[in-house]
Image 1 (spheres, rainbow, N blue to C red):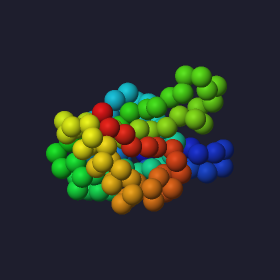
Image 2 (cartoon, one colour; image 1 turned 180 degrees about the vertical axis):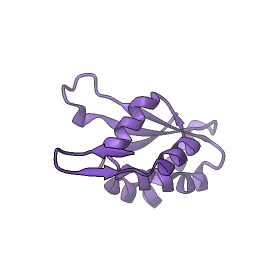
Image 3 (cartoon, rainbow, N blue to C red; image 1 turned 135 degrees about the vertical axis):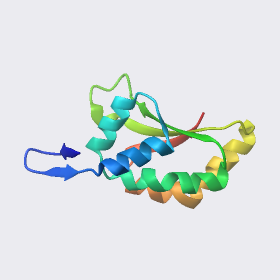
Length: 122
């Protein structure tokens, strides 16, 4: 898959990586999520490593990718990819675990994602 980033450059995205992402996550609004990943291919390494990091804190919970779109923004620059952890763990415990995940991994990973995505609980 080739993605046009500007009028002078393209980025090749390995279709195998997209296939891996589709196996690791449930994609809500699939076409929008994939378009966003294609537009911001630097998200791919973060998305591929995230499940292993998350599994330490949320061993069997489903992982979902969706879009967070600000309805009041006139620019798509404010759109973000959201990685949702669908958990049945009680609220206090799951928030504590998410905080631990943030400190152990996500704070660094969010810089690599150039703040175009975030994690949350569902």
